[in-house]
Length: 153
Image (cartoon, rainbow, N blue to C red; front, side, top):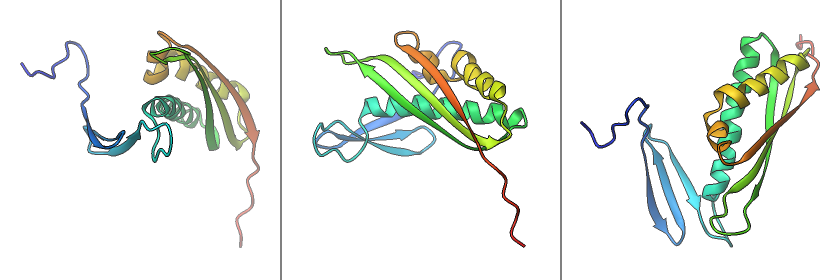
């Protein structure tokens, strides 16, 4: 039995290697690299906590766009603005996290957007659902109407 075996779970692996100062390079099991910077001043990359925040937004956005496309909605853009509050004392964990989705499309159904955001929050987004065990996670959305422009002749 391998040391990385997890009972009834999916194995995911990564490495993080110190580069210099408080800068580290993470490499995912799929071979992608990302830089983390723990320097408070003159940072050159996101901090680990900023990465967690962005991961929640990316995970939820993938869900929302996918659900809307499967619902045959004409989605043109999706942007999630995230805000988080952190504890005052160490460990400075997130205490609150809010995700606000601005979804742009043609004839988007507000009900479908609401459903997509809710499904991501309650069922699909592994990151925000995992965080919700210890963080107050909230979601909101707005629908931005876009018009299809006729193709140039």
